[in-house]
Length: 312
Image 1 (cartoon, one colour):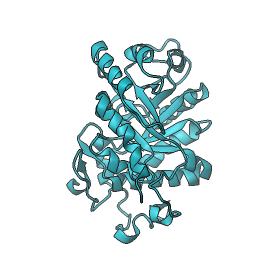
Image 2 (image 1 turned 120 degrees about the vertical axis):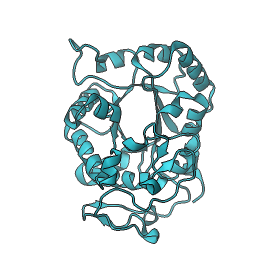
Image 3 (image 1 turned 45 degrees about the horizontal axis):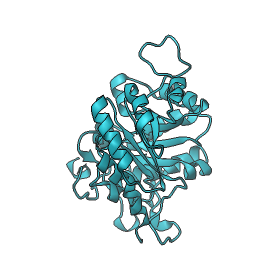
Image 4 (image 1 turned 90 degrees about the horizontal axis):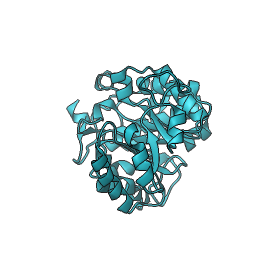
């Protein structure tokens, strides 16, 4: 497995085994992604698309970068972080969102530039009420949030949230007008067992079965083995899964949704590896953890959209 994982900040190399499915034929360097996996998942090489003068996104949506601050920060450190973000120069053609801890959302909302939108890190499955410790969609909206992160691996594997429950949470948030950053991703043992696609597609299906519309959904592929570990999927590994996710949406939802839905990558993204990842055609942005706590580095990740503009 060591050969298929890349340490953050180092130059990635193409994996010898992508860990997607055991029955997946070996990728041919000249026609990467052009085969079918188990005759049901088509991995399409960007070389099969129409010729382009720039490295562009496969989807039609705007580049999207989210910062998930998780359970980090104090009033003082967040004041400094907000100050850094307010003075940063950010490319205009990127949707930028940050997700502070709940108790600091009001502080951030009242001091952060309007250029950056605010997200909750979680929300309850329905209208608020007698649910100790939960945060309702209505409360997030009341305090100025435009987005919510749902299905993050820490909610799935530490808190124990199940696919169907997460799908219902997404449906309720969308019905009330919040955008949803819908997280999917496999654990290390699932990748090593060749179950990457199966896991991701099951998680996707739970969203697809529940959500009323995909207009305000951003899909975040975050391999669990790469979150906070210093390991990062190589651009080739991430692209493989992103192409497969877009193809699943095309076959199981609609071609329009597949084109419009942004599929972003998360998992030890930092200022050193974001540019190479961003060059991949189906990587439409990032969901950033630890590096989003450093204003200048987060700005570098936001500005990696320029990698999409490099001459092909």
